Image (cartoon, rainbow, N blue to C red):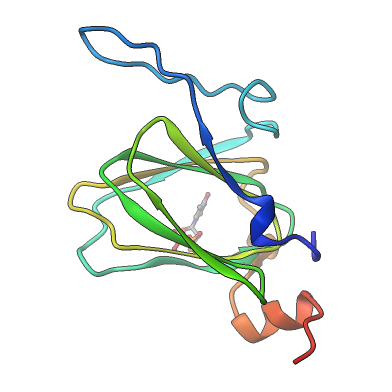
Length: 140
Ligand code: TYD
């Protein structure tokens, strides 16, 4: 996915089972996410002003949900950038492989739920921006 761009990512509006006693949103592999879900993790207790991410994945697909509170996600394909604000538990940002991402502006008590297409693999990360640009074969 070296040639992926930020335009391959979008916010999926997930169905909400609405009830006076509260809502339910269901995420199922292949039904409303276009990849098999092999891992779920969540970020929480993020101190104010802190940022997360700051890396790219070579193969990993992710669906990022603000399960509680809000935060911003910066996506960068080496040429174009966009910032997506996530602030509803039934919105999921689909992030395709091959993009640099940063998460920031976490509200107090925010929970960032992440569903991924693969198990954890340190070798799937690119943590250096220069290396990321070279991997994308971007010539400046
Ligand atoms: P990292 O993905 O760099 O966090 P973030 O993008 O949110 O800033 O992971 C931080 C640390 O947690 C890193 O040392 C690896 C570990 N980790 C796992 O062991 N398993 C996982 O599934 C994840 C996401 C991270």
